[in-house]
Image (tube, rainbow, N blue to C red; front, side, top):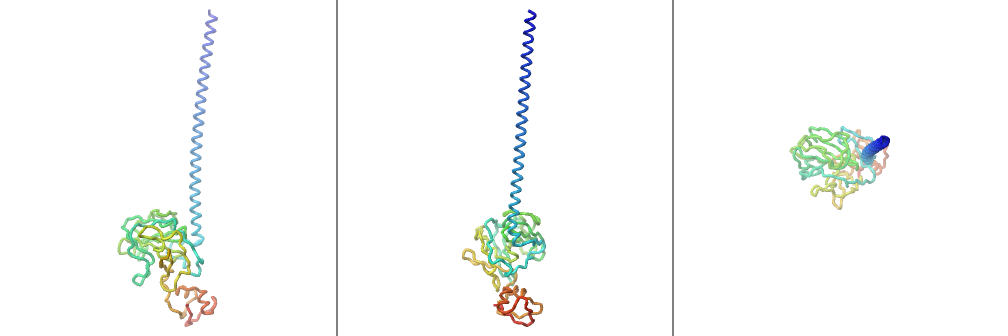
Amino acid sequence: MSIIKNVVTLCAVGVIASLGYAAQAQDITTQHNEHHQRLLQGQTAVYEEINLLDTLAMKELEISENFNLAAELYGSDWNQERVNPYNATKMELPDSMTIDLSNFSIPHNGYITSNYGWRRRRMHRGIDIKVQTGDTIRAAFDGKIRLTKYERRGYGYYVIIRHDNGLETIYGHLSKFLVKPDQVVKAGEPIALGGNTGRSTGSHLHFETRYLGMDINPNAIFDFNNKTIKTNMLAFSPKLLASKGPSTIHVDGTKYGYNNGKSGGSGAATYRVRKGDTLSRIAQRNGTTVNRLCNLNGIKRTSTLRPGQVLRLR
């Protein structure tokens, strides 16, 4: 009996031990699976982080590539002091240009209170839009902030943005900046708050559109009544620059004026050379080109000008 009892006891111990080993093995398997799941979750988080970084890198590259389009036009000139540091002339511009306007935003939904053009013997190079002090002003197109500054007898607080499409826009009489120079902005992004600073008689936004420093009538680009644009692609040619007053560009059969950054030529057929004059300066003053002056007068670019000499302008 004792032998049988001992055998039974040993068998029971063996079964218990087997059950213990099985339970231990199950625990190890469970721990392994949990560890595996944690590794997979961590791996997913890493992949998500990599994908996020790749997305941000691609976005930054896209912004950089887009801005290079404007960089080709303006070169290394990134002046953060002057509104128009370019001094471009008709002669220096490409023969033809197409400006992509498709990605746009109306800077503010207010109505026009003063239009582009001559005003009390002064050229008003933009339009005035009614805003209340504190209203949000938005970027017209994608671009980069070139300048934020204050001008007591002019724009007041103002922002200039150089856009990917080659345009620059100016926002004047602001009360507060929401951006800083060199900051990249998207169309519609808040850049400032409206105000009544500088040479202003009431709260409004002075808004200009320029190309290489030359002002274009914003009405040629935007339909402010319907809060949209006139055309997706604006054909702009320096040949449209006139010698007398603001010139015109045609958009969908409609004429819109723009000015070459000067007060316009005299409209005279001849010009009498004064001391210190150069062909380039005479051409700029009278809305023509050096080449045309040379052809009309049978002279060369290197010809010496004499005070009192009369030059044909047209």
